[in-house]
Structure formats: C-alpha cells, structure tokens
Length: 393
Ligand SMILES: [Zn+2]
Image (cartoon, rainbow, N blue to C red; front, side):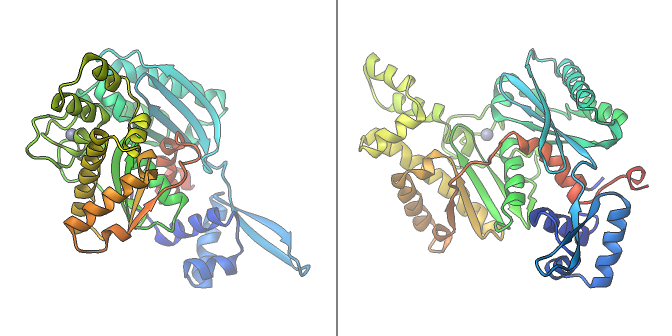
C-alpha cells in the first residue's frame, strides 16, 4: 500500500481544521481553495464517517454558526520509541495527546524475534488499559534511535526484521507498522507542526545526530541502498578517512566523522598528550568541549572547524540535488556563534551562492520528542486519508 495522500483536498482540509482548532465552511473553502460545492461533498462524507463533528456556536454578531472540528477520539495511534536501553510505548488520540504510556527495559541479546514478542505484549497491554477497541488503532509508529542500532543490533538491517511485528499488528489491529529513524520522524513532525517550513533539510547535531529531508511536507526517501527501509543514508564526507562506520560500513561517512567519539579519538591520536590530559578529553562532555573552543583553545577550535566543514559539505551536496529553501539547524552546537561563523565560512567557500543565507537555527526543541513515533500513523493514515474499506463503513 502506498501512503501518499488519497485525496489532497481532504488532507488539506483536515490539516487546516486542526491548525485553526475548528473552522467554518466559508473559511475552509477559502483556505484550501475548493469550491463550496466540493467542500460540502467532502465535509458531508467526513461527518458521516464521524471524523468531523459539527459544533454550533453564536458569533459576536449573535448569528448562529456551525463550526467543523476534528473528532480526535475517532481513532488512536501507538508510538514505540526504541532507545538504547529501554523501549517506550505510548497511546495517543488523533491530536497526538498521550492517553497512556509504558516503558520496558530492552533485554535484547541479539534475538530480535524475542524482543518483538515482548513489545507486542506491551502494546496489547496498553490498548487494553486505555479501553481502546483494536479496530480503532490506526497503526504503530516505531522509531529506532541510532544508539539502539549501534549498541544492540546491526543485523536489524540485514532483512526486514520488523516483519513479525507487522504481521502480528495487522492481525490484531486494523493498522500498519511504520518504522523510521529518529531524525526523519522528527523532521516529519516538525513539518506538520510548523508548516511554514515546506522544503527543508534538517541537520541535528547534539546528543543525537543526523539529517532528514522534507519536500512539500513529505519525507524524501534516501537513495537506494540495503538500508533503505530504515531510511539510513550515510553520506561520504571524507573519502580519505580510515574509519569505517558501524552502521553503513562505509569509510568516512558523515555520521562517523562528526561523532564526538571520533572527534575525541582524533585529537588524542594527533597529539601526544600526557595521561592526565588524555583523561581530561576522555571524560569531557561535548558541552564542555564547545565552551573550550569558544574560549579560544586551539585544538577544540580545529575540531569545531572540521565538524563545520563536514556539515557544509553535506548541505551543499543536498542543495545541489533538491529544491531546498531552508536548512533547519537543531542542537546546542548551532547556538555557538563561533561554530556558525565557521559553517558560513565553509558554505561560502564551497559555493558562491545563497546557501549560507538559508540557515535557520531552531530555538526550541519539539515540545515532546517522544510524540514523533505516534505521529507516523496519524500522518500516513489519518491526514493522508488512507483508511481501509472497513473503517469507512
Ligand atoms: Zn555510516
């Protein structure tokens, strides 16, 4: 099944009503640009399906009005966030409000099938606890963090390991399973929450690192590779590097080259430090590292410049391939004016163009980052109107 929008007008209508927290037909028709006749037809169908509700109210001029609102409790979504050491499961309504949550420790010892059995148990438990009918569950969004992939399982990629889960879920619930990496799921949720950003490249550099591309509010799939199903595309930024990546098995990929672990190791390799200084670096947090660079430590500045250069290469290459109008930068490092000036310097050096003018440093984190998982089914099934026949009756 393709998870593209089944009906653009319905998608636009649902998104508009959600954003405006309810709206009347005149406003909706103007904003999503459909004729009043077409709108009447769509809203009639959605009212009949119980997806929209009609709320009567009296406006400031004492006229009776009808407000169309989304019935957020019509369906539910399940989000699964697989962190390094634990898995968090949440159940939300269509507004992505959390109705219930649970966590279990990842007692994962290479046996992914076993892990999925436990996961499925917890999913069933939370659905029962929240008194949600199985046929009202839109699907399960699974977000796998990089930390889990590296630490726990590389063979997660070798075949579609989630097949068991997908089969079991579709047996029990009406829904589907969507699997994404953390940064991509975050980019998709951001595009929804902040629709001003339509075509963007999100670069995250902090405790978590990675990048994702959104074109026209949709995630762009990475180039074809055997990691495709997971959306993991690692871009080579340093072909002369000797270091192979644990995830993509390529030499000098972006994800490896900019990892703090690698940065620290390189510093130690290049300098012949005493055991005391070596220890200092081994225990240094990245926050401390940035502060030392800002206060003028040469070694740290050199490393920051290196990271800036790799990020600039990544951005320039994507800018050449795709119609991007914004580069969203997320993470502590971008709040360093020293680092930003390095980044802009490299961007201008590599391309006599406008890329350095398209940078936007994101000020705030997503309100609740764990909601990125449960948003996947809401996005692909609800907003794209991909309901199965049975639910439309
Ligand atoms: Zn890699």
